[in-house]
Amino acid sequence: MRRPTNERGHLTIGGIDATVLADTYGTPLYVYDVEKIRENARSFVRTFEALDVKAQVAYASKAFSSIAMLQVAKEEGLSLDVVSQGEMYTAIEADFPPEKMHLHGNNKSVEELEMAIDMGIGCIVVDNFYELDLLEALLKEKEKRIDVLLRVTPGIEAHTHDYILTGQEDSKFGFDLSNGQAEAALKQLLHHDQILLKGLHCHIGSQIFETDGFIMAVRKLFDALEGWRDEHGFIPEVMNLGGGFGIRYTSEDEPLPLNMYVNELVKEVKRQAYDRDFELPEIWIEPGRSIVGDAGVTLYSVGSIKRIPDVRTYIAVNGGMTDNLRPALYNAKYAAAVANRMNEPLCETVSIAGKCCESGDMLIWDLEVPEIQSGDLLATFSTGAYGYSMANHYNRFPKAAVVFVENGEHQLVIQRESYQDTTRFDLPYTRG
Ligand SMILES: *Cc1c(COP(=O)(O)O)cnc(C)c1O
Image: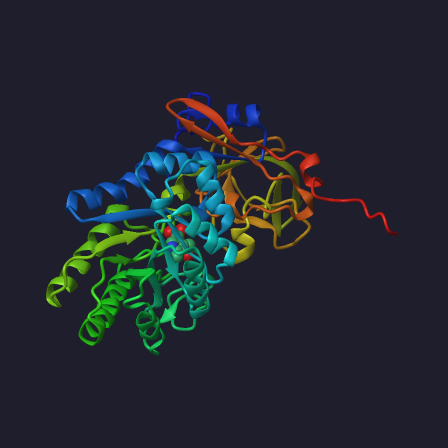
């Protein structure tokens, strides 16, 4: 894949020289091209608009949540998925309207449910019977009412990595459609005076490159809905088909254009609704990765280079599984380039190592690079989703900074942590 470069042969991000960003903010550094975030968001929003379908595009904020990011999401007219008090709090700090938030989670706490109810959240996606009972008790106590969706598992296996499969029957998420649990939950919610069941939700997986899984899920939902209409008179206002739209990490990935996912989903929902004589429900989706993933780049400084003759060359960078857990967590693949040598011929194969004390802390195996030296700047691409949001303090590395670039300008949006921050919550032991 061709990456943008300038006359110095340096990688540019949103028109800005990557080496300037590294010199200004230090490394490791997450850099987001905000125009790309907006473009991704608009691919979804505008396709629904062009099809004249009532819709909500809810950004799954777990992919990357920060005040600046949620400001952009708000500007683009997105709704927001939140799964914790921390994500709700961030959204409130970003002045995100609560009525456009949806609360997810397979083990929502009383505090999370209370916070959502108190702030007037748009809807709660109910996941299990325990939560349903908590919610009923809280609403009674507070004399409030709320809109909910029922999260169901339609028994679809999306073609993706096992660890991020969530739609199959054996799942920790949601009510199963086939074993009657979903219907039992429906019955508990029907004619409830404080809970309004708006419709169904399903999320079949992540990093999905085909539309078949979504189409099968739509059919399964309508199969259930048809029965529920006949049995219980339930008519959904909303059908939420989740997220999971795949992006390109390496040249082996072949994602569909984002508008195609929407087109195909809408086509199938329309067809099923028409065939079974339902009014067209609102269609909601929850993209996370596909909004921020390919908008992010991580910049690292190259440190030690270990050449093992006839075996392998390890190029170590000043980050790793602390700023990008995905390779260690599920063997995720990334593309990278030497940002200060973009026009030099590729001449050797190396592997990119993180600096954590784990052999598994490898960012990339077998990467083609030009002649590389300590002090060079390495850029890994498509790190915008589940990068900063999964960052951790292993080995007590402070979390890296995040910079936004747009219109030829750059701005720090999350500060780099300091060493004082790493011990900020530590207290001396005084009873020894
Ligand atoms: C993680 C998740 C998403 C977002 O998934 P992406 O692969 O980032 O698009 C959407 N909905 C639910 C319920 C999720 O758990």
